[in-house]
Image (cartoon, rainbow, N blue to C red; front, side):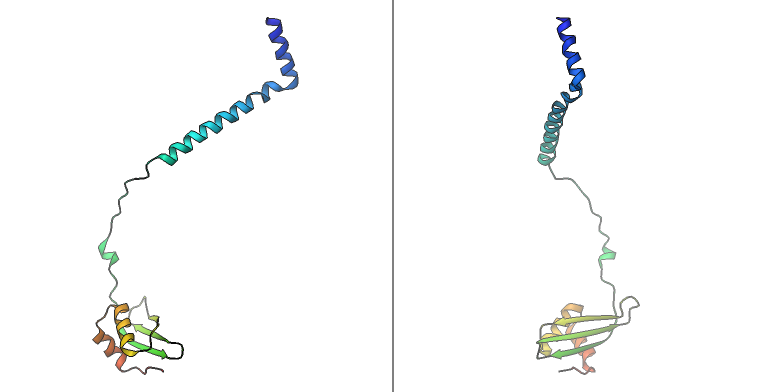
Length: 132
């Protein structure tokens, strides 16, 4: 019996099969193992607790002092372009484009965009030449 086993080992050794035979078993083990890990990761609860600290001072919009509002109404295209000049050192000029050519609607849109009372918008636009 021992002779038979050693003979098989000699044949396997001469063919190099003692190295190649375990490889499919190792591949199968890795395949099954990775499948189990993947199933565990996918079925895992994704409800992690994360906390977000909000600094309310940084979320406030900076106070921007507006010097002038210049509107250019282009009735043929149905749009109005508005340039707003500010005193801010960071933000010198703002440009907007609105899909309206009516002055009252334009003033309301500018008021909403700049978060200013409509009276202030009218006062800042009063001295400007509105292009047609």
